[in-house]
Image (cartoon, rainbow, N blue to C red; front, side, top):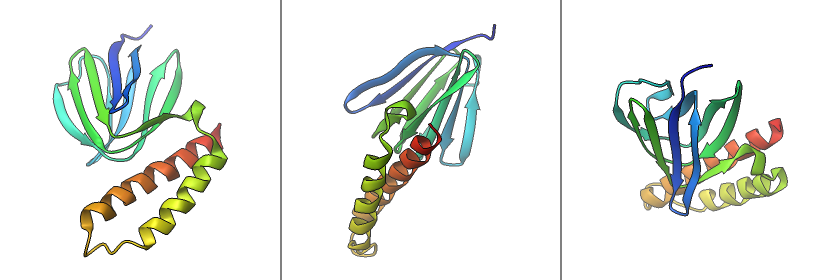
Length: 137
């Protein structure tokens, strides 16, 4: 049995995940990165995408928004704006959310309101990730 470490996934609404896992793959701003027990400590940004963890020889996946990640030798804490377990995503709701966000994004002037544009773009990436994860279930 592989060694395990604690991973905690937290949103503003609370703790979404708190488990002992074998491996985590996260969407860092410089690309995906993997974490195993004993990883070199680090602090990095998380970009919207898929965060997955290995437990009992199976990867479980989350659609996550932007945030931060702290890795220590025996634990990992991920703080993100939003997180959705692949098992809990409703495909029709996620598809409708993509359509709504695409419309809303089309109405925003990126030059005049870059902060709102980036926020909507991040939410759209999360919504599309939800659709992709729900479609694989």
